[in-house]
Image 1: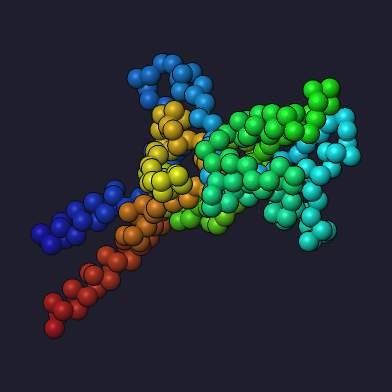
Image 2: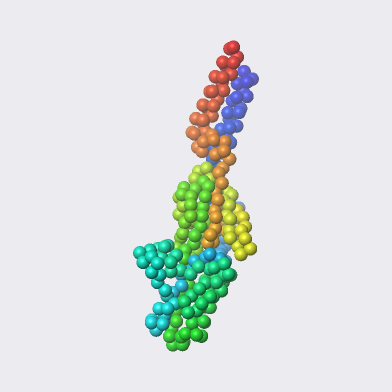
Amino acid sequence: MKFTYILLFLFLVICTSSCISTKQLTYLQENQSKTDTLSILRKRPEPYRLQINDLLSIRVKALDQETVGIFNPISDANPNATGEEKLYYDGFVVNDHGNIRIPSLGEINVLGYTVEEVREKLEDRLLKDYFKAEANVFVTVKLAGIRYTINGEIGRPGSNIIYRDQVSIMEAIANSGDILMTGDKSDVVIIRQYPAGQKVHHIDLTSIDAMSSDYYFIKPNDLILVNPLPQKSIGTGTTGLQSFTTIVSITSALITTILLFTRL
């Protein structure tokens, strides 16, 4: 009889600890003690500063279209390329020295600059050496999309590019098929590139405070890792029914084994 009570106690403990709770599944939960979340929602990310291997799309427009043509090369390496492939052939890559190489202008250092600062730098250089103010020079500088890699407990792991100037981690996750039920939303890992190397950051996506985090908006070349919950390691199931079925099977096997040994 005592042994039966012990088994029943263990059964209840495992049932209550093995299921994944709603709190672990819900994104951006509000703190009930806070009445105003507007200050959290209004935070804007710092402008991204260019790093080595970033790909830029640069286009120059002016009244003198013939002269402008030398600054807007169209690659003939793959005339059928579209989308990302076209950007690969026609874009400007920041090399190991932090420079981009533009026809006629030569090497221009852009490492650590924002795209807006690069635009101003190019316009000043063009007005100084090639055009007059009356030419109405118009330069567009954009990152060729925000590339990120996401792995772990995610619907579609792998590398993706979102063609936006600003992307939140929630958008990146949604674009990759959402975090699985077995993924730990409370401790998502972001490995971010910096000029001096890589740094590891953590963000809790179950809390509304995540929206005020410095890591809520992803940066180019971010690596996002979603680790599994302990319940996956235990292997008892992600829902109450799955846990109940698994535990009943294990308990039945244990009782059968014990009965067989006690009858010998």
